[in-house]
Length: 391
Image 1 (tube, rainbow, N blue to C red):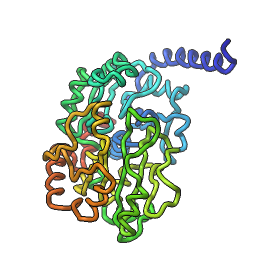
Image 2 (cartoon, one colour; image 1 turned 180 degrees about the horizontal axis):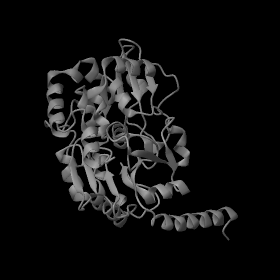
Image 3 (cartoon, helix red, strand yellow; image 1 turned 90 degrees about the vertical axis):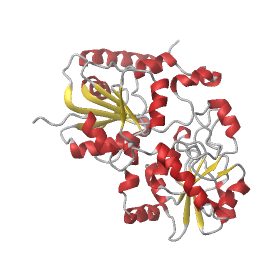
Image 4 (tube, rainbow, N blue to C red; image 1 turned 180 degrees about the vertical axis):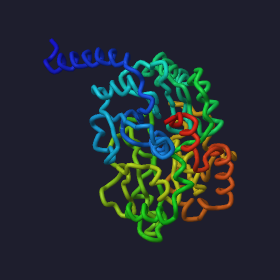
């Protein structure tokens, strides 16, 4: 027998949907934009950069963020928001003219004639996405491909950071939406942040003057439960000595409780809770990556990238990839490749991480994956997507 709480939630949900159907008959608000990121985790990524630029270039557009109740504490002061599933959420989804998201809006909203939906995505695809996941049974069993296609059918525009992404999106998310090859707004800061601002970010993170900061931000593994990185940051810090500090950021899928090492371990700073990954990239002198899409963004900085990938075979078998990150071919591999802790420490001890050979790989990688990023992507997107004021 259903509990009283279950019955109460059922009644509330159906009441809200009934009111929502009434709101769908209201006129659209030409000056309202609703933003969302990472399944309602707060202000972040491309939507955040677009929102900020829209406030500058289209001040008549009012921005409203969707956030889940468990993440409302992440909302910056002064930024308007609604809680997903609430009465204000459904009113906003029914009447906003502009919708901007890097993932999807919750609850199965009805897209109205006159609404414009921009899908920004949240990374360059190395792993298989969308319909391409059908080839991998472990993924296909838990993926609703009809739901994916229905979601794609709502898009009016799809943002792309590079030709590789555009080709993948076209195939795995087939639709009639407009292709916007304009670059990633979230990457603008890599071209516009001053050295003084970077110094302030490093100081705020506790990076001592003169130390080399290495950012390690491993991606999610579909075949693993919980945060289980292939790198022991404390061991690496000990191997490299006091001139280095390792910044460790667990993937957001693992939440804020992921343990990245012993608290206060020398040479290691846990930055999982830092609100802006872009600031972590700006603070880092080099990136230690595995298969994270952060690799493609970090390449905008033209700073050293080291690929540490001991489980490449398992990762490709479980998820599939679009190219061989470990091949060593220009355009595929952004820098030195390691598969053991000793090899990784050796890359830094010998200086290979910033060698001419590493720089050449990085240049080819940037040319392939960062051709549109120049510090003005947000401006291009805002001018294209949002109508100017006619007042």
